[in-house]
Image 1: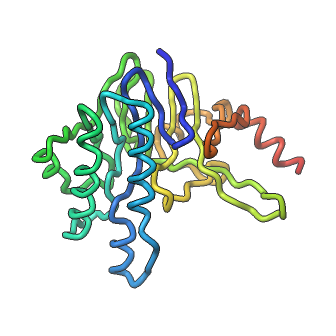
Image 2: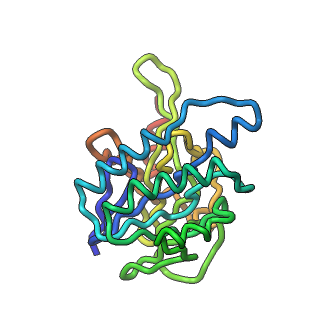
Length: 226
């Protein structure tokens, strides 16, 4: 079964478009702590609408952490509802696979959204990735995988990545504020901790293309020589 990796931090399998880790309401939850960030809502919405219109999937799957706060609040709910009001007319079906941040989201069923713990597409099982489940081949989010690279002036920058293994694919976070977890320093998901990620291929989503950095072990060696 062909899996297409897209520069917009999504994958497509047949007529299924899969993204993960939107963390809607993130900025609003930080406001409650006295931290102010520009809202990324319109940026994410514009990116996703353009992607859906171009790829024409029948089904959109959000693989966990649709929203951010562990304690649901009104403004977050307004943002989630506004998001679906824009996306629902563009696809025939939307499924949210519940992640660890998706507390109190069952109300979205009233909008026509299906909420599941996991879903199978061919030989692949789509789960968020914060807890282990039975199966053979998985597509997960949760990790927000990234690597640190040096730019042209020598500054370290964190770059979101896909991790592609034979039986495990890890999606980067769709949210631009989820900068990512540097997998060379720490691994969060129990799925990745159970495997040897050095044999995974590192795919970097750029604006219009996917760039392969080869196996993670090869990248580590290359960075060591720099």
